Image 1 (cartoon, rainbow, N blue to C red):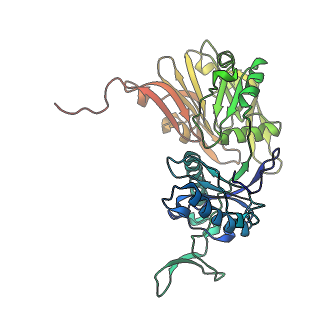
Image 2 (cartoon, helix red, strand yellow):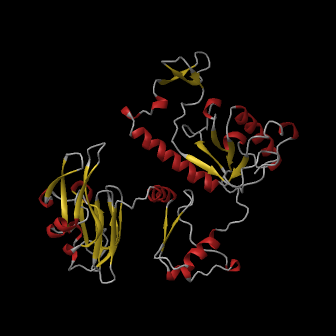
Image 3 (spheres, rainbow, N blue to C red):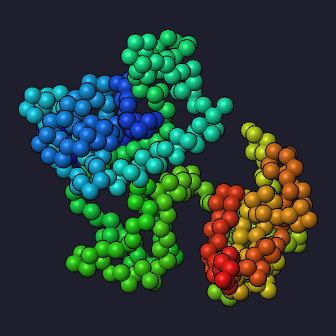
Length: 404
């Protein structure tokens, strides 16, 4: 945190919408973009190549005063590459202007991950918008000043002009907290000592690959991690899981691999993603209709043995949005569920089922082997996206060879 600026509330933190000017490579922004938001700027757009802390403090303080006057909630600056975060020391004449605005710097790594995340969300928003143009950018056109040729943006409806590209809100919320002592491993150790069936740890979104390691001096017993299954997931997945459990719900579909390679399934099975046999479906599946939307879905409320995989020694299983895939001990890949998600050929589409709203879709309700991989690759690990499947495999020989 910067000296002589507002403190972040110690218990509740400071939460709000994030604003980071990423529409161009110059970090352009307008004051109206900042109102009521946590603003994040790449330092080089404000200070160029300057690295002296005193000179940086003066330039960044000037920018922070502008942001404060625009009604921002907080102001953060991303350090350039190979520069550690530092404490900004505002000049005395700016103390009063920054008395109500938290100001701080963050690492280049943190800022880069955050920028990539916001770029992805903004691109996703554009894809989902009519014509690929988000509502905030609608009616804005790029123009040039008649004499200088300087680029500006003009709204054809309101007549408003701005130098920066129209700001598209990614819809991302941020929470600033002041952590003086990190007690995560202390809390994790207490949880592990109760010997739960498993523990799920959600990462911070900007550090998706950090390992669960703590200095031995802190007294964390890492052997606990080998006794209790501990899964690490992304921040976004953790937030989604937290929201689901907060409503008293369970995940949509669950799969479990037994030590002997058998598979149990339960949850949503409208599109065949549970792979239950006809007898098992008749006995265990139930139908639910949403009274407001009219959507009908089939589900299995308790674990049911997947007899269709009885002769397969399954070692890994992954669930997608509407399909499921497994890897066997022999390296074969089986997939089932919605046809366009599990990669089924037309001849494999065993049934035409509804998607809950009466639309007919091709489904595979029994596991089928992905025979395109036979004699080419031996699968080791499998991963499922919403409608995609990926494998890590051993290749028997290079797929392409150079003539000698």
